[in-house]
Picture 1 (tube, one colour):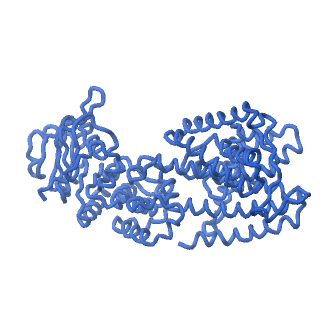
Picture 2 (spheres, helix red, strand yellow):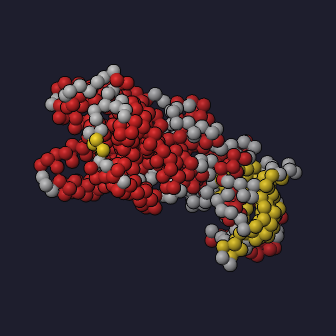
Picture 3 (spheres, chains in turn purple, orange):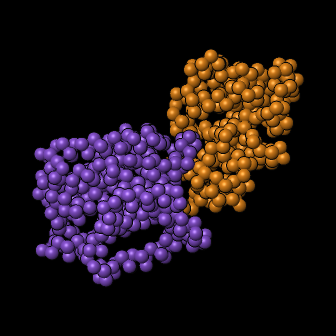
Length: 324
Length: 253
């Protein structure tokens, strides 16, 4: 079936073109804001492999995002490296190791027990980052300098903002495209089908020969590594990593992204993450009651648009045009 | 035909004080299609659950093709060729009808471990899935989500998913329960013809005696966790214990 991939390419190609042109037509601030959105979208992509495709609601994905970020900070602090590729490698490996371990404990549970356990484990990491200040910098966090890209071929230069809004933006965009493509293949693979089968009916999945907890664990691991990759990409943007990103409230944001965009669709969490980033930034910039704005949005969303933005659009569009 | 494909020896399971399956010796010969009958609570489903691995027995043993599988994992039992359908339909409701069947094929072939190939691009699996759906008369519904099928179609798909595993031994737990009387015969026609043409040994739990007497050459009757009678439809019809305990009361089902 070449139909669905072709249809996806038909509308994603113009979107990609627009994303490539964007930094040349909008102010740098907007590009940097979008970079944050793309980074969060990669995290949401990983998060939704568990929620949308495996039927497991994690409330502890801050652990993997945070591990990705702290691994980068440790690479700078202890290994004195400043290459972005080294950052990505350490971020993915560290978050993968933590996800492999936490996953072993969590995937034997489902529903609220799974959610609470993932959250509790992430809080353990948060408290470690908070208390072991001689390693982690405590609440001050750890500074991360602007990295070099592509093994030193692309240098940061003196104008950090110009670097972030152009060279770094394209770097993130390229990784984002690869991450989306890889995840798209995974969810459409026989393995992805098995995950959806587990989501729909665990008992029956077992009785067609799918070893449920093993598949859940692999999904958990992949999910954690994607989220860790996002964490590693996020630190150079932020310039600093603090325990906040390990806190469960940050896991809550990932749930928010995904519900906002629509967890029953592949592209929903991506759209949700980017829109949430704008929403939060503007809410914080315009009112001191920004948490209330986000709360109201969440309430309206759950009551009026439970399918999320993309899910609702998909229902409104005629069937042949469905691509998302 | 005299080779025992499956043999249980003194298989026992209790739930509290209830002896759901009480020291049952039960054999199934390769190639036969047999019915397991009995009133509600007789232990038919529990017996199948014990053999297929949904629950563990308290004591006794299960042999399949001469080897002990009493404590084998569900995964291993499926690998050996034991599949089942469910009394309350168990499907992947959000997946399409076709994907329900192809998942079983991917799993059988050990391909569900593949992360980096597109499921829909596997034409061999797709063609086999389409052929299975055609055999079950579900080919026109291939693209629909399984959750949107009628009860009769869902029962058929449930059997089709188990059949797609190409089992040696197939347990069908009430394949016609919950469907109208009018639909029962067509469903059983399809199931028995598919099972026979595939050379599959089948054990069918069924309440409807007309269905049982029509489709199954061997009938095993259970009562209060034990086997009451085992024989041809005529022998069962003329067995006084069966008539007293089962046939007089089966109509309510």
